[in-house]
Structures are given as C-alpha cells and as structure tokens.
Length: 191
Figure (cartoon, rainbow, N blue to C red):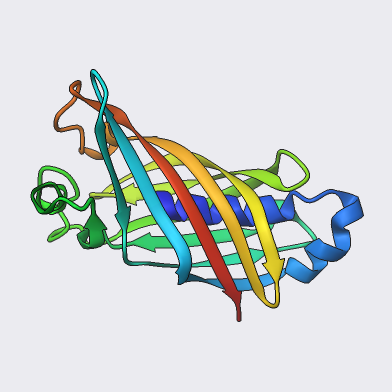
C-alpha cells in the first residue's frame, strides 16, 4: 500500500518541475509501468527502547500516468501483494502474512489510487490518494522526488508514514510503533 503511495508521489514529483524544466516535463509525459527491476518498496517499524524491524515487498505492480498539461490530473495506481513481505526472519514474515497483520489469505492485495498531486518544489510533489488494505480505505499522503529520466525510464524516491491501526494491523502496540515508515524507489518504463 505504501508502494502505491510512493508511485503516486513519484508521478507528482515529475510534474512538480518548474516552468524552465518544461522540456523535461514534456519528455516525461505519458504512461509508465512500474518495474520490479530497479524498484523497491521498503518499510520500517520502530520498537520502544530501540530496535524494531525493516522489511520489503517483493511483488507489486502499478502504473504512473504523467499529464504535463495539468499536474493534478496525473495518476498513480499501485498494487502490493502482502504474501511477498520479507524481513529476513521467517517467523516474523509468517506472522506478518497471518490474519493478525496483513491477512494475506483473505486480503491478497493492498491498493493505492491517487486522487491528487500537488507540486512542492522544482522536482518534488505531495501525492494524495486512497489506500485500501484488509477491506479498509483511508486517505494517505506521500512525498515524491524525481531521481531521473533517461531513455524511456523514470525513477522516483517516495517516502511517507502510515498508521497501521487504521487498517486493523495494530497488534503489538505500544511496544511496536503504530507508525510505519515507507522508503521506496519506483522505476517506471514508458509504454
């Protein structure tokens, strides 16, 4: 679900370029398929007293559409498959997939659909959208920074924070933080 947000944020960042960069923005306009090659959806959950754990999703798909006439009409759709979660610790991975957290057997997808993109700087934007996980949908915001555009490939760095309690995944609080920090790299290929 954070991946979706990051994808949206990435599109927003590209659209957030200043007027002097209009040629680059015009070059970036179009539709991109998010590629797992060159992309990463990572997250961190802190623990009281220090520690916590880091993880990532290995499977996801999505599309970024950049509208160079109206940045706000750009779109990001991202789907994450929670059964692909990995922390490097089998026991934690199994717990995260269970009905206590992602309930991957009954809720096999986490989806993010953008609703707006707002320019915040020359190469950055705020991407707002609807995140759906475990049958619950809430608005979420992510920041996106354009990291590159070359040969039909675009790259964004996306960050954001999501409260896991909103989605019924607050097991372990307050020992483990309710805040999930996302740090994503989204690479899209034109076409």
